Image (cartoon, rainbow, N blue to C red; front, side, top):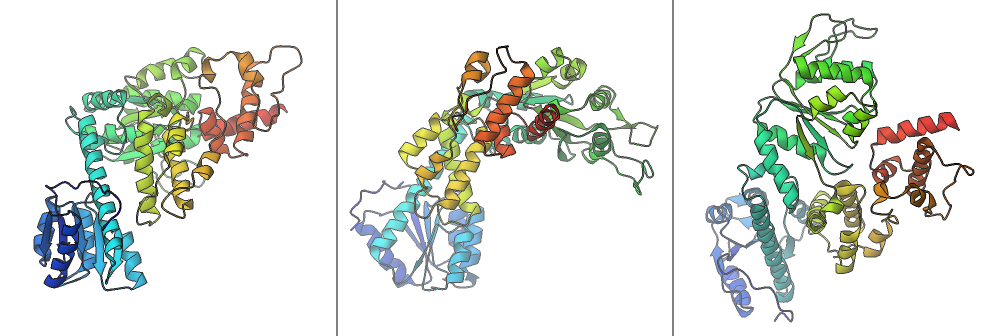
Length: 484
């Protein structure tokens, strides 16, 4: 008997035992009956089992690999495709390692070789029932969160339980049919491209979704990338290039890091938004396109336009439909959902039979962390932890050791003196400039040095810590090298 108290299974969702041997099916049913598992369906018919699984009428499947007229591995693939929320446990006499690996990679929760110890079988079944119940609860929870949306399936890639995020989903559904541009703002790692894809999907536009990062592109490369060129437009242009605007014709062109766009390129983009026309390089004949523009940035474009760093007319044109994604620290309840989501996804991508667990203490620490790199930073931490896990749990100590010491939560609003007095991880104090008040450029350079020290020279991590793009870090480094 199982000496642990298992969760009560849902009596409306029985366990399906699919085996070609009637005597074995009956023997397993007796074992489960002794454990209080009375809701059992016995079958030796793959077609009958297929119908039960596709309708979601079972909580778990015990599957024999040797079935009449069909391969058990093929059935596993079918079941996983038909109902990924239903765990499948392979129960077979085949002890081949290669078969075991293939089945686990194909989605089997466990692989048990006959004869099976009762304790081992029951442990696997209880684990499967817990997984099944958790998936049903998560599905029901997400349905509740997405209630009120006409097409909630468009937003399933965005894991959230936050009301502000739900409001953004409803806004996207409302403005999706519009042909006007959308400006998506938010810190690095908040999922701006996921939102852009949801906007495109909700729009019903027949053309493609095309994404490009325009940060750091000079005007010639920008023009060539978006608008293309004619044959012979410049040395080496041996053939014509249609450009991404043409590629996204009738669809959506997503311009990431729009805040780093050069001034001349801003003028060309503004003309395209206003007139729907553009000139390929080497051509004096304009082309037209109904491509919709969705732009994204980590910058405050309103402040940048007020300071003359970004064209105000382009800013107001872009933000016809504004969407601001709240950072992860402003929706901490999402952190727990994302931890579970990334645990499962990382385990699947790494070919692990099941996701390792995260201790309660570690989970609480993660939920209290500010995540300056937002969802992307959390995903990286969890994936690394799953990859390094050697048992049923991640190494909490190693995971938490990767969290840098937090900057003050309200650094942007903090006084300059507080920022300058901040001490780095290596205890090296921030260098002041004599007795005079430092300039903005000097403060920027010092913050960049601090971030690079914290990130051990990793530019991507430094950019996440500062909430800016990698291109901006490279630009700062070039300017700093030029001054020093």
